[in-house]
Length: 458
Ligand code: ADP
Image (tube, rainbow, N blue to C red; front, side):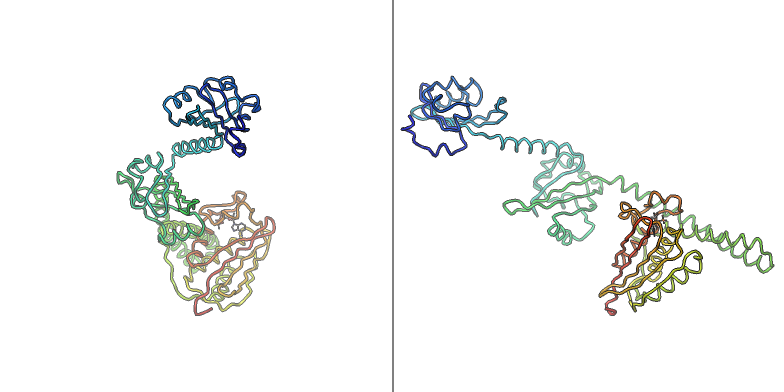
């Protein structure tokens, strides 16, 4: 028989090949075909194929017979539990009988099963998941998206995602596209509108994937944060209202205390003056806390106003620190450097930045007696380093200290509300600058403020 089929190349294929005659005898089998059955060719040739295959399985007689009788190409897919593999069997009827090809398709099946499982997972997700070909309409829309937006798969697929959901972006679209092309992803908050007209806020993550054919696909996951945002807004409004309400009586008390101090001093009554002066200092602390609360809520609402005027940094730093020194008896505040640097911005707010950094440096270095403030100038920036020799900040906390209301856990004994560095950071950001920290626990911290120089000053 082998002389009739001298196709040795058939042995190089990863396909089992059997040529069967009209009496179901094996006329030819290649190496792989014999291997599938755990036999040699000699064992198989001229034998009845029934002796080697069970009735149903890799080779189905019903299908084979039908293929022969109807003279049509047929195929089946089959899982062989004893081999733990998937096979595809193809039947090609010929005038002499039947040619059977058996392919091991385990890898393809496993990929398909994995894809199926992933598809089920995507459907299970409570988040809205959608994909579209850049910049074409939506091609995938999961059940989470239907639940969130109210549009069914049929309604959404084929639509442009941004127009379907009336998406408002936190930044101009060209800059978002540029980020996507540069980094392959984008993350941010989107305002959208559901099918029933309900406004939504979602936390969006998009990934740009370039497929083998060069097409770009966006994978987008959106989480509904509408309620959280509404709650946050109510909380911010409350903080704003409460601090306004607190400010009026505190200002009155401050005024009255000063009147009392003056009157009693004029009458030469010393003891109450001493007590009232202490009270006055506490009122100042209270005022500072209320101002910080107001600033935080203004920043949140994007309503903190800034001047945009030239500011002489040397003068600002030396004057601010000199003023602070008058009320800080415990530490020497040492300023060095002269830069002649001018930046554009708000003098009072930049003063607030320096005051916050310096008072923190003092507050968190109770065992030390000095703070070093150094002014330097680089090609395009002026830098102010505020260095203390205090308790330092643990590594894990360093990335959080600029967040709103964040305080290092071990610092609960030191009074504070975790607002100063948040406000400071926001002010610096608004001036186009950066604020970073280097710190070692037990050795101290250095906060480095860097601001862009005014164009005329470059
Ligand atoms: P507050 O000082 O009111 O808690 P801040 O926002 O100014 O709030 O600071 C946030 C946290 O960062 C502080 O609670 C403190 O744990 C830490 N921190 C800030 N400055 C320093 C510093 N110079 N040294 C050590 N820890 C600091």
